[in-house]
Length: 170
Image (cartoon, rainbow, N blue to C red; front, side, top):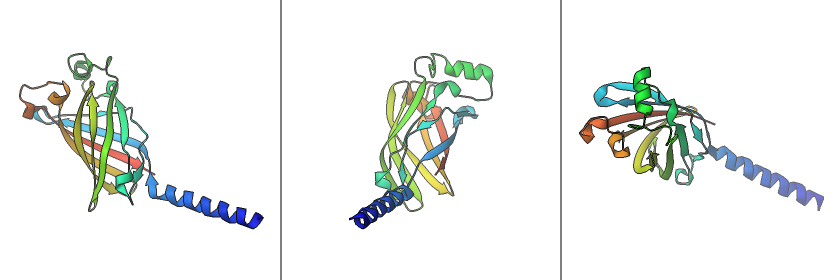
C-alpha cells in the first residue's frame, strides 16, 4: 500500500510540475506610449497583473492587469500635471487603467490578445499583438484617447496613441 501512495504522489507531483512548465506569468512590465499627432512620448508604470500565459494552449491564457494613472510621465512636469488633471486622465477619481483579455490566440509566431481596456470607467475593446523574444513578450496596440474621454485634439484620428508593452515572463 505504501508503494502505491508513493507512486500516486510522484505522478501527481509530475503532473503539477508539467502543468506549471506550460504556463508563464508576467513578472515585470515596461509600458510606453506615443501620442502621434503631438509627437509626445511617455511611460506609465505601477503595473499589477495576475496573468497566466499558456503558450501550448493560448486560448486558456488570461491576461489581466492595471497601471497607476498617477505614474504617467512625458518628461515634462507641466504637461504631466495637466494630463493628470480632471480635464484629461482625472487620476484622483480614476487611479487605475485596467485591461482584461477576452480572447487569446496564436497566429504563427504572434500572440493576439483581444480584450477590454478601461480608462476613466470607459471600457472599449482593443487588440494587442505580442511577439515573444526570449523571456519577454513585446506587445503593440493602437487606441484613440478621445474614445476614453481624453480629448487632446478635435478630430478622432488626431488622438491616435500607440502603446508598447514589454513584459518579462517566467
